[in-house]
Image (tube, rainbow, N blue to C red; front, side):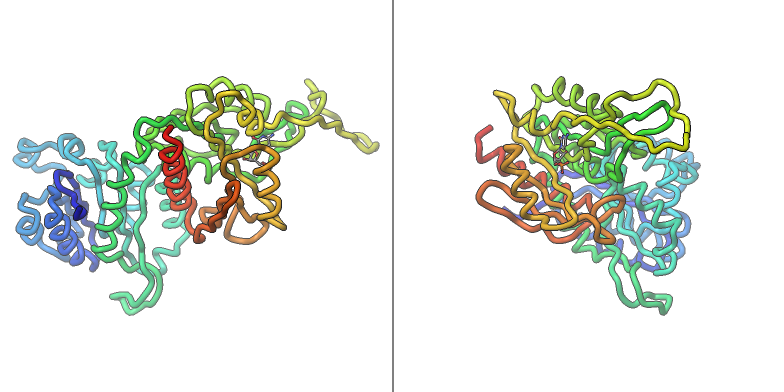
Amino acid sequence: MTETLKGSRILLGVCGGIAAYKACELTRGLRELGAEVQVLMTVAAQQFVTPMTFQALSGRPVRSDLWDPLAEAAMGHIELARFAEHMVIAPASADCLARLAHGLASDLLSTVCLASAAPLSIAPAMNQQMWRHPATKANLAQLLQRGVRCIGPETGAQACGDHGPGRMAEPSQIIADLLAQRAQARVLAGRRILISAGPTYEDIDPARFIGNRSSGRMGFAIAAAAAAMGAETTLIAGPVALATPAGARRIDVRSAAEMHAAVLSEVGANEVFIAAAAVADYRPSTPQSRKIKRTAQALELSLIPNPDIVAAVAALPNRPLVVGFAAETEDLLVHARSKLERKHLDLICANQIGVAGTGFECDDNQLTLLWPGGERALAPAPKTELARALLLEIAARLAQRGR
Ligand code: C5P
């Protein structure tokens, strides 16, 4: 069967930048695959391409002004937002990323983005220095956390004469990504997935705790991807500073004991449990109700083991498919396989830590999946990408088991 976007209603936002000319080809490609395309241009975009070009290619009048009484009477900005089954912004300028990240509604495109619950893909294009700026990086990280998909940018020669990252992804790549998303959108439809994420904090006294460096980003990326693939997703989160992914139900906990109780009370309804949390192995045996005072003496802290949550779930009589994580600094695969066996998991994701740029507190990661009798290394990628690869693997297993 040839791939198609027949019947899908795509809202294409075009920002001001020289890459706007590529959005013409994108509009044409989307129409050729059967999509209905409504183009929204920013004021700056019209400095590069005329609305007439997009009108001719999309077969619909282009919208650009939030305050156009005639256009608003025909299809108001809220109706535009409802029209969209998928929103694509290509090219997405640095200014656009900033507006989206901060939820501004200062022009038609940003207002429609704020008013729409449709999945959003962005294809950034900008000068390499703007792309590398910490402000842009922070804005992008914020958007990725919320489940926005970023396609590109590519590295190469730039219109301004620079060389570096910031060229807009090719229209064919954007279309391929939309096709893949459409194919994956229902892969986990009707499935119920429980995910634990983040660290746990084990209180010593009212002021101190034992924690760890887990940021929760991997688990949150898995929850975002699971919801985007149609799963009914429950996320049990330790203390993290992350936005709840669209479509996921979130339960906040603090300690391993609280996480243990929440997981056991929720797990019965789920077909999959993904333990991405970095649960503290020990907790203080007697947390103090008053702040411990400094003295000249050495202080001994007595620690007792926490329950092993994932092992407890794997030991349930009617267990779901159980997926764990192993974060290790050395002998990664050996330790991961031994955890897989010891905890009776169906799958484990081995995760190298202690190497700059992957593992804890960053957006990229490198995972190897291990299961009884096999393993598969996934190419290093952003956590959002790895989350999707992991869930596709899980979907295949659920289908195989005839669950
Ligand atoms: O801490 P460890 O490396 O053994 O964690 C491996 C896996 O076990 C992870 O999936 C983690 O979420 C899970 N785990 C757990 N309860 C614990 C310790 C770890 O569910 N108390």
